[in-house]
Length: 164
Image 1: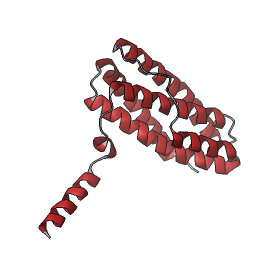
Image 2: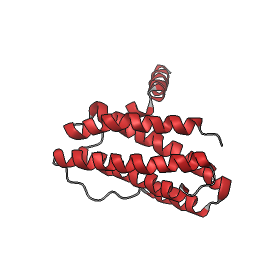
Image 3: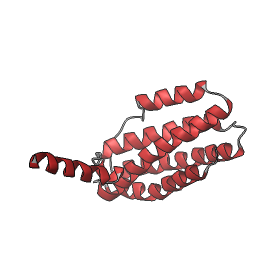
Image 4: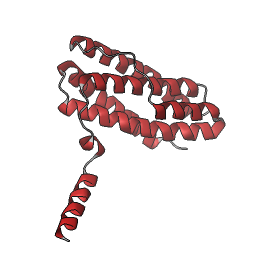
């Protein structure tokens, strides 16, 4: 019985820790690939949404293209400085299916789906940046993650304020 109580308390403690603290620190190469996939996904979705009739969505999408192209360049430069060789980023299966779902949707339903998907994508991206900025091993990538983190946080804040 004591063992179950201790295990239950340990599980509760793990669940109470923020998501980024639970994420294992990726290697430098994994970080580059994950950050690249995240940027690629957010840029692809933003391109779809740049024609939205909702001015808030359209403005957000345009900001995403600008900011995520910049973060891609920052990570590429940092990887080069750290001598980290990584292949071209590829979308993860969930990102591919989310992009397909967004492509198939129309109108207000598309806008709502975009916001929902972007909230999840930015939560993941924020967790990645926080984790690597705090405990990454490659100096330049760690610095880049620290610089990108507040930008991703601002995107999270923008999404939280978006009226749907």
